[in-house]
Image (cartoon, rainbow, N blue to C red; front, side, top):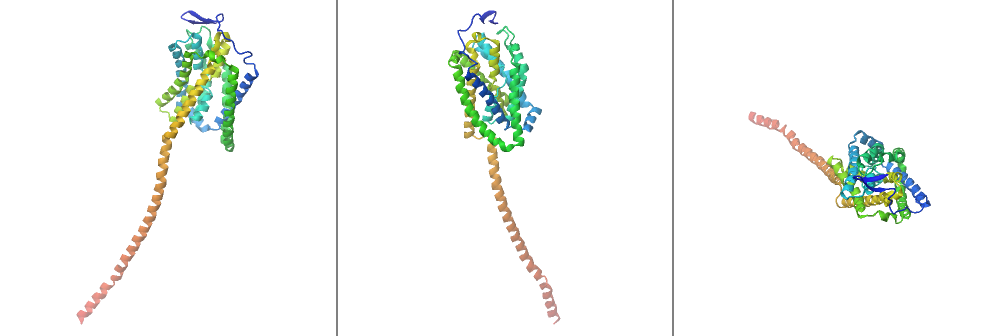
Length: 385
């Protein structure tokens, strides 16, 4: 296993990092507890998100896959290229550039669904994109790793793709979402309780995951915090969020879908990235970069939360156009209805008044008709006399 740049040897098993994993890493009780909590948390998140979906809207996105196509282009076009170019721009070592590239070639993660919900995105499109992105990873990850890793890695990375892990991700996404969709259509009375209870449990589990993650990793992650890796870790999600939104805006998707594509592009399934690194390299070879996906995920979460705060503040200051139109439409309609009723009453009163006047005017005319003959008779009698 040799990593080369222009034929020069950089790292191999005989030139290891001065690095070792924490004792018993991966087999400690805290490691097992973290794995169980993450699986349960993922299932609960997808069940809760499934309760916000509708089968008819999912079908519409599949029959008219404009948003889905744009998301796939952003996911497998923007992110791998961005990872490759950032590695060149910051002159990362081969092992660092390869680690960044593996993260960039990973499919969309389930965090994108949760953040799309917080950004008031299209949840039906979000779940469809995550599912299709994960399914396409079976072919796209080997292809992209083969194309972009040339000149960085002499081994066969495409054989290291965790196909079993990808299939498990698909199953853990589709099954709870399907249950959630079924509950919303057949048992809608349970949905509010699932959403409220699920949100509280997810929040508590997130705190537990954060604590356990830092207990497991300890200070080892500090060794991966070089200035260049800090910069690339911060820029990669940001590029995904911004370019995903701009690309969908370029193709005239509505704002709700734009936010969804942005979240889907910016969040990668970093569990798959960790699996590839674990299978491909020994800890002595990969060194502290073994924890790079965790470091990358911290920036994803931080920047995603920042976008949520900006979006919510923007909505407070300036309501969405659709809501503004709704307000302006409803208010005049009520006023117009009252005015119409008032005008109707006035018109009825006016009609009655006019009718009365007509009756009063026509009555004397009818009475004067017989008078004319009477006068003429008197005139004739007077003439005869």
